[in-house]
Length: 430
Image (cartoon, rainbow, N blue to C red; front, top):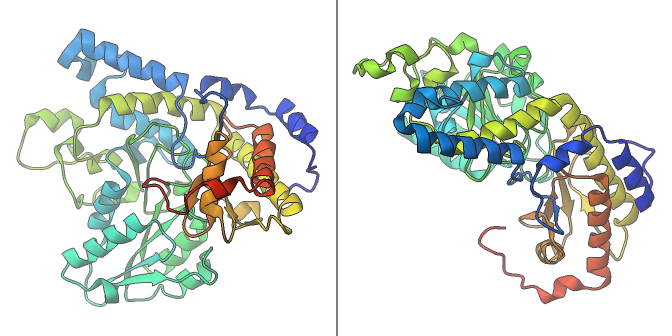
């Protein structure tokens, strides 16, 4: 962590004045009088996304069905085009990434492709801190093979309820394991797993390994090819700012292109043969072969605009600023809010090499109601049970002054007991 941080607000202004990404903020729609710290759940709308969406709407109005080939960004090729843009951000070759489906749908697609239990190798390794949707999907995949998830889905336990130790994962990698599926970043704590090491250890034992990068893509550089990862998947509505429900992505290492997709669909056909309408599936020799259905063109258009911003900024610069922002937030909490009567702690790794793009602030008694009080002040966090206030100062649109103001609000909410006017009952979406 940067030891030169200072607690006064003037320091935040000094950091903002030196921010090389400061102009990016002007390309986003930030709700009026709001400090938005929830970009790890839903990124903000951008002018670039709006422009691309308007272009797609105009193409539909003027070209109708001809838009599939004649639109400014021809709809037929959008999945591959956006996959190539995304490849710049995850250390992959253009043909190894495709925009398609949803995060959980892509999990099913990848696991259906790679999980082939044979004599002795029937187990999948996951972890107890992963987003529950992944565990639901993995259980169903095991059951589809007529196997018992209680025996064949190995969930690595956390030692402290916050983090997963890679050593604990590796010790389960034995001759009974077929596949490992882990998050790139843990959704509660923001811990960044060592994907390179885990991949190496899995491959030493002949095990396929993949990652759910929903909480890391767009905030953390990935080097999938250099790490030799087998597959990965992620959403685009968090750090990538693609919009609510925007399409997801698949990364597939090129050495697996000749595999048969576990879940086939006509958009996975070779482009030049797709409209032959043959009942024999001849899938594209790329990640594109793992597409199933027709892409949502308007969602893809908005995503294209947002990806343009991330690619222009560059993932290394995004990561550099992200780490400065999260380190500054941790510094303020640890140095000004950790003692009584505040008693906030950070549940995110202090080591920058182990941290994703958000910070888990823990308050043992009143985290939910503090979140409510923050929202009442037009500061937008989110909450994760039982005591985590998640704050994501995003490099493309948040400032160091935002971070300082949030820390000050955390102080004042307890000073004035503002949380007491809110119910302990959580909202449906928290």
